Length: 338
Image (cartoon, rainbow, N blue to C red; front, side, top):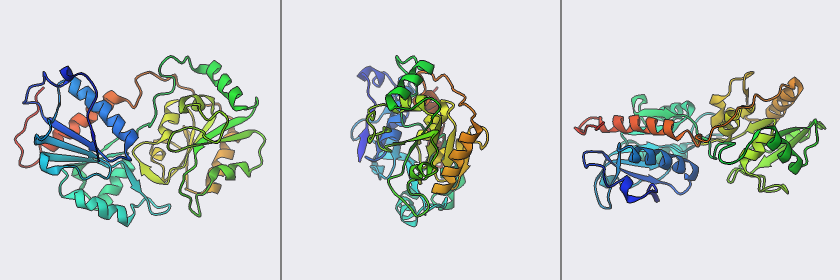
């Protein structure tokens, strides 16, 4: 279990009066990207005086747990629980029984269940973990910093430089995507299926799901923003519903996305507009990639902004409403200060 303590000088917390609700935020070790996003949002709420961190040993007003962590429920009045990942049964949008049993232990102790994505929220309700009125859905998040953030100029010059570094010839379309580590009979190595098409106008670049890089490639140190700048199509082929998906980064850049139904980014894709949603099968992905290449429509590039990791202000506003709901539940007289 990892306790998250938002960074910053003591002055961020100390002037806040005791009437402001106190928070303890705890995350499972495997919830890294999601935990970082929530920490960033909580820092904004701390800075705005809407929350204060609970002191060691203090009984907090709110305990916010992230991922498969029980947390110290005895040191909090109310609990908000964020689901970081839902393992699915094969290609179905149904949670595995094992995961549902583990999560059910938390059900009675949670005032609000928080998911990222409407599909994940529906699965939580269908698994009888919480009634619909206790489930709140926030957007699926990007696990990496915004493309173009910082000192990069971006644009055509960046795209051309990266493509030359990757060895992509003129006229060849670059397809980028994460190949899942866990293979199934239906969804194994979609990239190999695309390569079997035998097309000379396509180059496939496999990414590492952990680091968002291309470790097997000579240019493996290139970050995801640079790779997306050079790409023509992204494949989101997740086999579990995760709160974070690199497909969100691609969509934010205006890059078309082929998403399987078991990837969280699928609910953000409108077929024929910003990509296509397909069954979680190698052949379905390969067919969708070929169809996109034949359409030959250039990506509708979007100029990214520096404040897009992962829209921290919007996430903070969503968390504020969720915390308010938890504290206004039965049996509490705590009121928020404005």
